Length: 220
Length: 298
Image 1 (cartoon, rainbow over the protein chains, first blue to last red):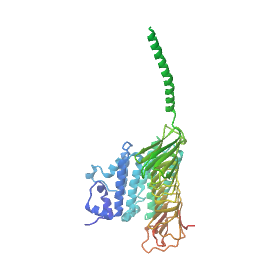
Image 2 (cartoon, one colour; image 1 turned 120 degrees about the vertical axis):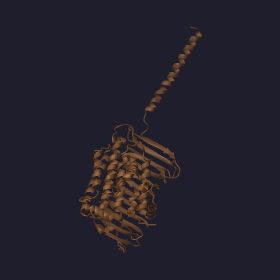
Image 3 (tube, chains in turn purple, yellow; image 1 turned 90 degrees about the vertical axis):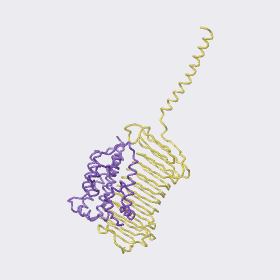
Image 4 (cartoon, each protein chain N blue to C red; image 1 turned 45 degrees about the horizontal axis):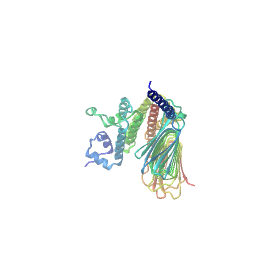
């Protein structure tokens, strides 16, 4: 049986997660610990998302729509074919269940998926080309999305001054960290270390925004 | 009015007054009792089976958890004010402890609750404490601790430990099992470690690792800035990769260069790759702008 590559498998990941299981994908999964680990993680995230309380407010639909379009632009996920557009995808299905306080948890998921895709050796060439071809680094849309989300809840003000100070101070640290990493990536687009750090910084920012959103809402 | 009717009426009045005399103070006492808030210091005990799960959610305060030999969980809570309530309840083999406000707009200092909790040593812990301090000693079960500003101090653990802080520092002494620690600006101090899996990451904090590198163990320490310091003994055996993109790598270990292909990180920054003794453990140290010190243990 012809086996497929990791890239082929990732292209089919969405349909795989919806239960559309091909034998060559199965064969690949049996032999590839990285892809197997990714699938297990995604299943665990989906399972966890389903257990979140239904009464919590859902995130605004535009957030996921926008994020999806950004990730599609970056080539991290594929576009929906018109025939598929009418049915709920695993991607949308999961995030529709996410409560608002877990907003950046979902961001985190997306970013981890992005970082995973970009950090894999098979994607190195194409990603370097992506980063090189752009006049700015390819994470710019993600950064813009995070900034928009940050602005959407205004200034964070928790009743506990220690928590307030810590979250705001660390958000400033992460913003500075992102700026420095972006500068390094722009100077050396092929630098894997700088790119790893940049994605890690985005993950941290997403995580912080989730914590601030959650604590802000609990405080209201 | 007949004599018997008069006597009966008098008797009825007498009984009514007597009843009222008894009832009114009783009601007053009951009313006072229900209006009196519970004492600020409470002690509760919960019988549990093997491997109980204990969850603690506390927005502000000190949490001290210690293992003991009894098959029960003891929760001693001390509330800072009557504006904060403490709930401790048992669901099967799980004990949930949480602090919540009893009124709107409670001042932060009034929201504080401190806990002293004793658990069986095989208990699994899940602790959320935004600010204050978390101290855990001698608990061998798995634990997950998440804080914002609270520091976490762990002693003599043996399970799968995951720690996540925003700005809180983390200190771990004589910890075994599996350690995964993530922080943004907290310092991470790992001493006398006997763990086969350590993954510690902080952005601007320092990381200190002083412990054994166990055969087949994996030790990944990563920060953005700050210092990563690893202390090794002559008997240790590890395969080392250390990279600081913009900082220094200072090494006191005599390494044998690797014969096989080097890590792709070696193309960037200041890198060091090699094997110390037989290279049984894997040590990966990565920093963006910080200094990496690989020093001999005293």
